Length: 243
Image (tube, rainbow, N blue to C red; front, top):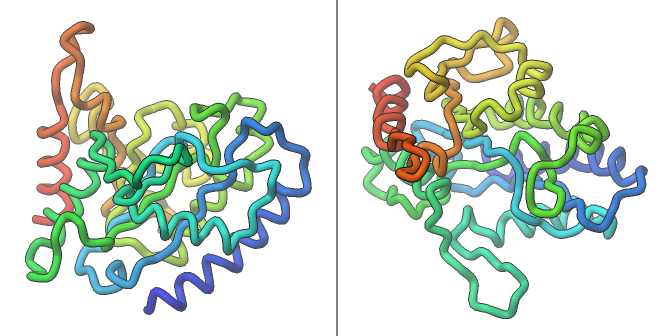
């Protein structure tokens, strides 16, 4: 398995997907689809991890119909949050949000035995359960229904990428979509929806698949008296996935 081969396979299904969605008329506040590019480091990892978030916070414009090749280049240049370009004329930014810190920490904890690995290594992959956003936030139910093929695309991507570990950082917001595509069984690891292990009868998800809340939510809130469960969830996934 090489990154070149995986990217070729991803490009094929991405072209099929974009042809379908571009055939429709979209508002200018709907983002372009988030399409993955595989870095060479991913193929060398002992524990290949795919993180699945909720939706992007702007990602180009769907109505401009950027080509799949352009979208793969955009993903590559985003560099897993290390060279984020917000188009505001400011220098590229290294994102240190709870989401990206969680991903990098979990990736490193799963692959630290490789002496060449740091938490800056492009050895994991990231996508979202919703392939686009609307006004930089969650698309309406109507938009989600129009994008059913985008939710199904994740299943095809996983079949190609064969990650050893999949982590849904989605909370419960997209459970209906996850259930429809994968029909998983959820085993509670931490109560109150803080951590599940997911399994599927058809093998469409890796045996080590987990679902938790968005890392920003895991950090809790003193104002709303929500406990900080970030470290607990991170360590519990490490325990279940890598030990």
